[in-house]
Every structure is written in structure tokens, then in C-alpha cells.
Image (tube, rainbow, N blue to C red):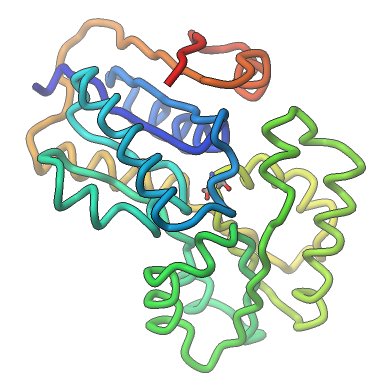
Amino acid sequence: MSNNPIGIFDSGIGGTSIFKEIHALLPNETIIYLADSKNAPYGNKSEAEILQLSIKNTELLINKGCKLIVVACNTATTNAIAYLRSNYNIPFIGIEPAIKPAALNTQSKAVGILATKGTLSSHLFHKTSDLYANGIKVVEQIGEGIVPLIESGKLESEEMRGLLQLYLKPMLEADIDYLVLGCTHYPYLIPMLTEMLPKHVKIIDSGLAVAKQTKAVLETSDLLNKSKEKSSIKLFSNGKITILNSILNHQFETAFLDF
Ligand code: DGL
């Protein structure tokens, strides 16, 4: 079992930000990535739809023999991971907006969170936010339109800059000193965000934390791949493969798969 692949899925190409961290930390691991770009964005779908899509992706990865699944999507994690954990007999790693470190370290007592509607309205997000953000102003902002722009290859467009300006405004007015990226597509915006934000505002993204957690769970479950053979990496998309290749800088093997 330990030589079997790690499965990773997202509503599209955003979870490749997590895939890159996992591959960098665990270069021996075989990885299968599913970009469900055909159904992106998940963020505006109902909880029931997000759950159905998460089940579809999970079952495909399990059929491909995955020993552990990383739900590289905040929207799918916050809406579906409890169900997945109780219905499938392999470990699941999820990703949630990192509100805790922001709330613990803020000096201005105001933090911003940019995420999808599905994440911000989820029960799990509210539970975490209520737990850690006591006495701190949390400026929540739905990143409406950002995922479709990234999925259509318009990462560095003027349209994107306009949206970010609009979404950062209330946060800057509230004097945030931390911006939490609550969607795995958003780390690709860090260069643009860094240009637009005052220097003292720190950006928090949870990619590395997810990779470390994946390693820890593989270790405790005795599932780390100890073979000396070169790992195989394969990323599948049911959308435009050119856009997946471009976000990966053409560095990995990809293929179209209708799922
Ligand atoms: N990458 C997904 C997330 O982390 C994007 C959500 C979407 O498809 O709207 O939430």
C-alpha cells in the first residue's frame, strides 16, 4: 500500500499550488491530481452539489488505488470532508482558511479573509472563526469571479487587478495586517497582491502546512513511500489542458480525462 499514489483533487487548477508543496516535500511519492475544471467554480454551488462532486473525485482516486487523499480545495473541505472521512477507509487531508495564525499574530486586531462563498458560508469555517477570532475584526470577502478568471488563463489580467482592488478596499479601510488566502487558486495571485498591499500586510497561505500534515499522516499511518524508484506524477484535467500546463510551467505530465 505504501507504494500506492497520493490522490489530490480540486475544483480546477488551483490545487496545483498545494500539489507543488507536497511534491517538493515528498519527492518520492507518486501523485495523481484531478482538476475538475469542467465543474469549476465549486464556490457558488450548494453544499449538496459540492458533496456529490467531492464523492465523484474521491471514488475515481480510490479506483486508481490512492492510499490517501488531499482535498486541495477549501470549498470541498469545508463542505464535504466530514462525510468523506466517515465513508471511506483511507486518510483525508483537508485545507481550511488559516484564520488561527492570523488571529493570534495580528497587531491591528483586524484580519482579512478572501475565500469563496461556499467556504465563507460553511459551518466548519464559522466554527473555526468563532474559536480563534474572539475580539478580532474579521473582514470576510467573497472572491467572486476570481476562480473563473484563473481557470480561463487570465491570471495576470487588468480584469483581475480590478477585482482585487475592489475586494481589498474594505480590508484596507479596516486596517488589516494579515490577509488569509482561503482558496487554493489564490496563491497564484501573490505577486499581484504583494504589489497592491501595503508592505506591513502579511499574506497567509496554507500550502506548506498542508504538505507537512500530509507527511505527518503518512508517517503515522506507515504509508510513506520508501522505494528508491523515481516517483511518477500525473495530473488530469477535464477542462483545458493548455491552461493546466501553463500554470505548471509545462513541468509535469498532464492528460485530459473526462470525469
Ligand atoms: N480552489 C477552490 C478552493 O480552494 C476553488 C473554489 C471554487 O471552485 O470556487 O476553494
